[in-house]
Amino acid sequence: MMNFTPGQPAREGAGTLTEPPPAVRAGALTVERGPRTVLHGLDFTVPRGQITGLLGPSGCGKSTLMRAIVGTQAKVTGTLEVLGRPAGDPSLRSRVGYVTQAPSVYDDLTIRQNLDYFAAVLDPGRAAAERRHENVTSAIADVDLTSHSDALAGNLSGGQRSRVSLAVALLGAPELLVLDEPTVGLDPVLRRDLWNLFHSIAAERGATILVSSHVMDEAERCHRLLLMREGGILADDTPDALRERTHSETVEAAFLHLVDEAVAAAAANAPKETAR
Ligand SMILES: Nc1ncnc2c1ncn2[C@@H]1O[C@H](COP(=O)(O)OP(=O)(O)OP(=O)(O)O)[C@@H](O)[C@H]1O
Image (tube, rainbow, N blue to C red):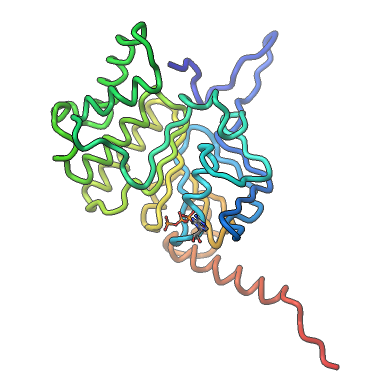
């Protein structure tokens, strides 16, 4: 279990206060998949202790970026630091929680058995049995599934399965949670409940949450946004600042405004045909 409190300045040496590094810092980050470059030299930082939304249309590179951050993506170049360490560093294993798009739970195990299994992978050995039991119990409580602990995962609803995946990611009290489209396919009530849960995790633990979505109305629930398009970052700002800057009522309208601006800028910079 980490004792570090995200968002608090770390004390180093004789009374010197140094800010902890951001949750994520990327410089000239490029990723190739197959023959294509799918992320083009991204520069951005994700601050600690907040919910940052990674938003953009399907195929723009959100999952690829998340996989690079958690260290499971090949052909990554440029710099990518996570909690001050290179992405994928073994020391980040318990400090970063990751929920992939498809909930990774075993249908033939109960919720508690699923959690017990992942806890044993993360924190193996007999000596850790009591700590594992406590971590599993509190992760199940965090996602509000205590009364269902002994239900088979195969009998759960989509929303409950998403919460089991989230509970797995919460084991070990990670400082950074990376959630890839966690609300996809959920009804509005479940989506609202999950977003409330993300906010309470960020507020109560000071955890950083990086969450992707292609549903623009979810942008309004984030503290900060990274808007993506075609493997690039279109904007990196708060929802309020984005709306103000583009004189838009919604983040969706702001996104469309920024796309139009980018298209116009690209056209203006395109080499002109010169008359002979
Ligand atoms: N294995 C692969 N080989 C080549 N290209 C790939 C591969 N996997 C994904 N891509 C391409 O990389 C780009 C980014 O994909 P990615 O899954 O990161 O997008 P996304 O924004 O997460 O999309 P979605 O919201 O639909 O999940 C897409 O254009 C996709 O076609």
